[in-house]
Image (spheres, one colour):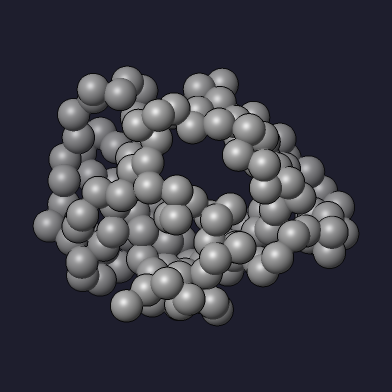
Length: 157
């Protein structure tokens, strides 16, 4: 499956009052090769194993495959993961026909807040809420896999 996604910094916390869903996420990476990143994620009582391919040159799209797995298996796999875990609070906000997923990072990535939107087409238009900041699509330092190796607190000024 092809994933088309744009990513933005967030400039205010106004999204919190607009959110219709909130969840805590813990994830780790079994493989950090950019050609095929393998992620394990636990979110509430569910868990997924995800394989993501190499991003396009502009960072807008890449192949993604995901499957639900038992939570107990995911917890076991998290023990095998590289580097630091990514821990974050996710807020989901409907804007027009789309949903933004806003992640407030914790731990070594504390202070970073990113919004992502999945699109059906790279040129698809979407509503840009007031709290949406600078676009960081295609900037590898903002990929979760890279944040597990080089956390935000180490490079943010």
